[in-house]
Length: 130
Image (tube, rainbow, N blue to C red; front, side, top):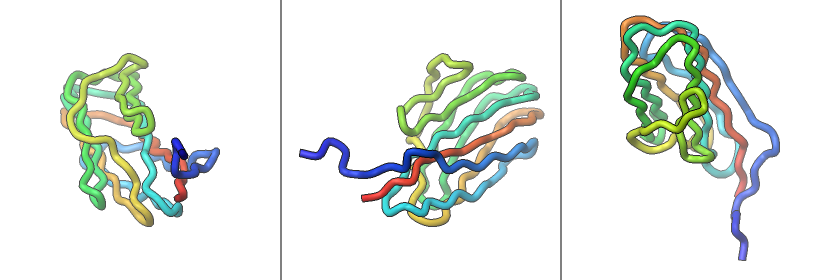
């Protein structure tokens, strides 16, 4: 019996962007033959009165939300491979489902709720094959 019916690339495909307006969208292209769980790393260089972070794949409708405080220099990891969100390494509660990247082009929207912020977001995934 095969425990893992899919093959995965050994290396990650990744895209990074820095933004200070919300919402902001970014395209990710999955060239594999099966959906791939995504990992998003958000590093806030500035944050004022932030109360929520939401990541949505507008193609699949999958959406995950962290609700809570955010401070400058916080590092959030939305880890779809290990099914957890961490803030500065500590596990956090969340609502929704982890974002996968469907075959082909995916549009991922980052929505930051708060007064002002600057964040560098990196999305990465390993191409998956059946």
